[in-house]
Length: 270
Image (cartoon, rainbow, N blue to C red; front, side):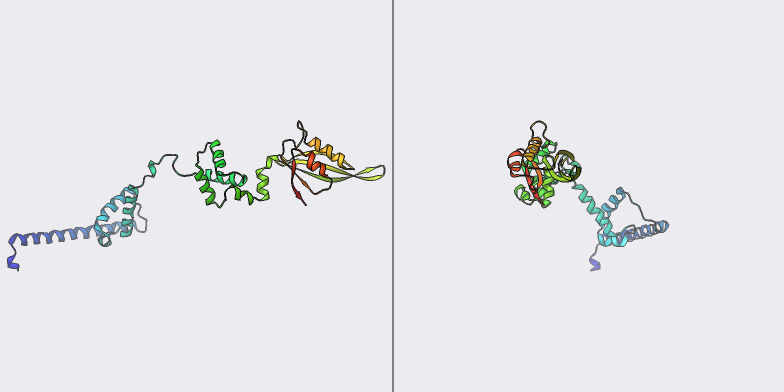
């Protein structure tokens, strides 16, 4: 079989063996040189630039994991191949081309949507969208719905039915006032006399109004107080929709039903 080989075949085989042996010696030298450099560094961590990582990744990918395991000394083969995967991912990354108005819904807008929904349970998706537009935020109705759904908030009808007392107060803070009696003992000619003092407070501003004081808070007196409070020009509660009162019998039926025309009883509190 050897006799069938032509002389130039033998020459090529010899030349290839010599080249391969020469390359192997060159590789052995470079590996040894790398070991010497690593010994000079000691335990210091090798800091590579992005350009250096790219160059090693491009060259290392062509060698493959097996050959890299034999000759790589600076980093592991897995690290070099990971750098190569990052290069590919960076090639297909178009995040830098996105416009400033396409990064998705900003966190501040999402928080604003949640706040509007919680403080205004009667507002649906469209009304919240309109309120955001008034503030300069262009958000679609679907986006509003997705934000509320992601945070476990129901649509307006269901959300309103499950509204807590504190949420209701915050939603209608500017339209609510409250009234209550307290007693003061005053010395008179016949001894101590109990005076009933009625105060009204505006919840949004904590402004307190002295409505009146009397030892006999009868129906006539209460009707006059109601007239004063609901006067269309300077009545303390003329701009309010609700007034919170308790079950005190001094709030006679005539006052509650007929005299508080613009301020109605919100709830009976013990």
